[in-house]
Every structure is written in C-alpha cells, then in structure tokens.
Length: 75
Picture: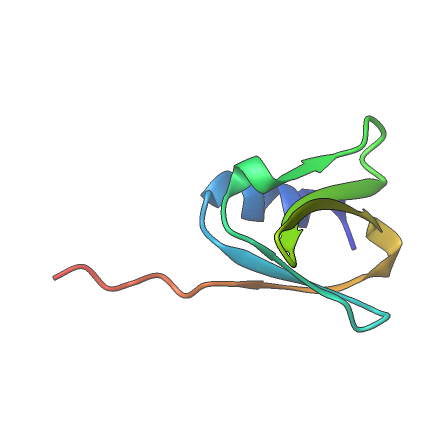
C-alpha cells in the first residue's frame, strides 16, 4: 500500500476501515486515531478492545485495502 493513499484518507477526516492481508480489520473513527512512523512504513492505529486501549502497529506492506465511509448526500 502506498502511504499517499492512506494520507488522503486521513486528510478527509472521515471514518474508514483498514483491512490487512492477514485478515485483521481496524476501524479509524477520525484522524486522531491513526499516525505514521517517521519513515511512513508503518501505521499506528489506536483502538479499544474489551475496555482497554491498545495500539496496532501495521506495516504498510500488509495493508490489503482501505474502505471509506460513503459521503452522505446533503439535503
């Protein structure tokens, strides 16, 4: 996965989902829950599981897909 694609998702500041080649799924509610390593080779995703805060270290090479939430139509 190219870091620029992830960066675009972060800049939109809308919820999105990361799926890894290993089958793990991480929901990113907004930009405060995700960051890059200094070399932009790894993602750090904060999440809560069973009431405990955790951080996932996700090498960009293992990111299989990014799924953004569709934009809501304005009325």
